[in-house]
Image (cartoon, rainbow, N blue to C red; front, side, top):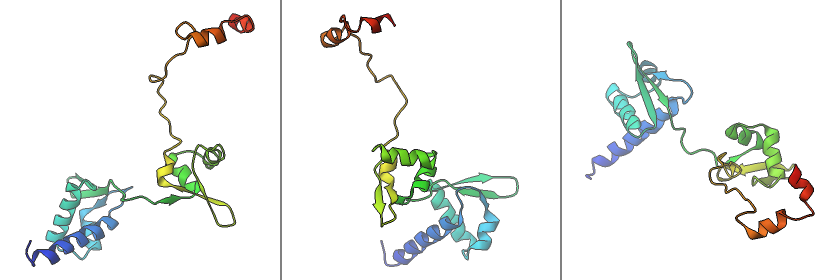
Length: 162
């Protein structure tokens, strides 16, 4: 890398970061609108858009008139979430998040005297379980002598009839 490569490289990174902030994740934005919002030349804009697309951060869609861009990666998320934000992240109600905290299935930290909870992003996925019974072994008394003794006795003969 030569001395001349340094400023150009940092300028390229600056172009990408500034441009990424203008591209929304929820709705596409057109090339012409990006041109109006940035001070980049068309060559720099094309290069930055190409780099962002190569990184997989944005996607483009060509229409008959122009190209539209949309962000697919929102960057590193927040580290701490409120109960409401955690509920939105998990697509559940606020009450469900509060119940998970009370039941000890989700780790939450109290903030200040008001007792507001904050939840780390790493802890948000901890209460999530896969709804797949393929890994669960069925228990029966025929294969396990301890279970056979517990289940097959005179005291719970009433339950066997059910």
